[in-house]
Length: 207
Image (cartoon, rainbow, N blue to C red):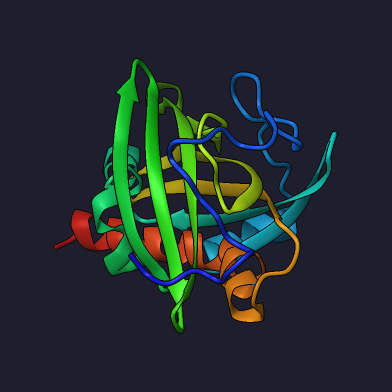
């Protein structure tokens, strides 16, 4: 386990979180993002589109990308939590600590330069319907104040196979965090999330 910043981070798997959510969680499937003709053209050119959607708690960022792989391959990539540290810059470790029906609980350890953030995520998995949502696991104490988000995967064509991947996160931090940690968590989070999924899923589908 990496060193944590004294008096700032205090993740604890044996203690509940301070609250049961300050960001509005999704109830059922997340709403589909609205794309303009310009957005679609950008996606078809192989580029990332970032959007803002309005939610009860404010704006939520959404990243959209086209991936040349079927949904089954993309979901296999997204759910391969054990490989995340190899694929995502700054992510030091992951661990599935519980499965309960359609819920998958994963611990994430993010670190850089000897400082880090530990947090516990509860995923609601409905890949047969094309989506996964998540919140913090509020039964455990995370270093993040809150995190709510989703993945959505939709196949667009069969020849060639192209799928649309959407990733959204509304993340709140506790007080002060080092600039490079905040950068990893928030400013670059959308780009980093979709880019590694595209790289790994396309490599798995076309080895």
